[in-house]
Length: 162
Image (cartoon, rainbow, N blue to C red):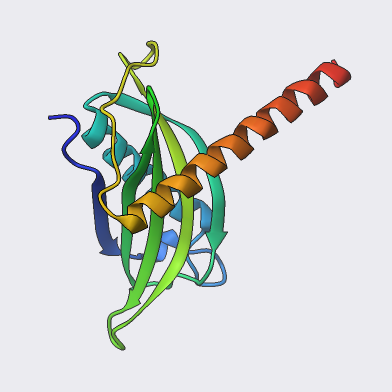
């Protein structure tokens, strides 16, 4: 049922197949986990097929090592007509020491579609429930405005080069 679930969490162990030659999880693998968790949250909220529209401000803060318990949490922070903005955090926990650290974070935008190759479709409106959620929503709106500015700059630059 759409409009009910605004947060999704995935948990699993970082495996040897996830790491690079330095023994740390590939940035691309972390991005895959982020996209999967964000997608699950977008579909759970909208009840529709969703596609990734953008990923902004991705920060790789600390490494993820083999055997770390990885927690990827996506939470809805803003809705548009057919878009959903998600804050996504990747946490890594050393199970032997019990220490948890923020490994990666970003903001994603998903768009709900009426079918896999269809047109954007409306999503349920989301309202913040407390001051923290209101602050995060305001940040999402500012990021949206910056993204629109960047799109305009790219369009203008593309016209100059074309």
